Image (tube, rainbow over all chains, first blue to last red):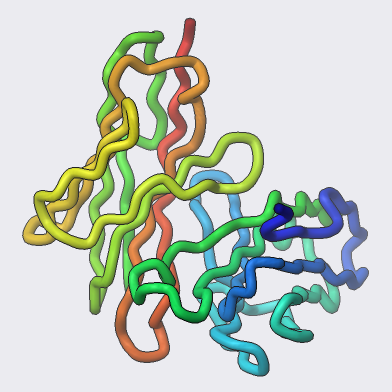
Length: 118
Length: 114
């Protein structure tokens, strides 16, 4: 009953370092999302993948890249980390085949990755 | 650009109080409005509303949508310390390439004291 699993849970980077945040879901969902959450700003969409093989930019994509490795996995990469990327990152998924159109809007979230860039 | 604004940003109450959280929105092609509860970690789904005037209820929590005035409220009656959390409101856009994407508000931080 894992749902959406994110790794790592915590990470500290130095400015300029790179890293990849991993996300996997076991709910057979088609769509996956990456958000960042900063104090007072709610959740902001970085990138999303409507289906395997497709990715698209969200509201705040600069400084990030993504890979939809297969239906289960969607990774987020920071090529050269900056202090402005200090945040909590959440992965989410939605839309199982055969669900009602409205049910497809319900996104399920992972536990988050707390990232600090010094 | 879709926009969601929640108020108040934070609220402190005592156990047993009733609270009302507000969410107003602007969206180009409205599909649904969702409420989430976020405790320490992952946001968890509470309600989805699509039609005006229909109240969704789950125990002490209830929510209603006004599509004409473009807002929703989340009520919590007889609050308990376990209700302390960030409550997030989000709208889903039904249009074109935005289909399925959610736009979130800033969240309301609710603190319930014993």
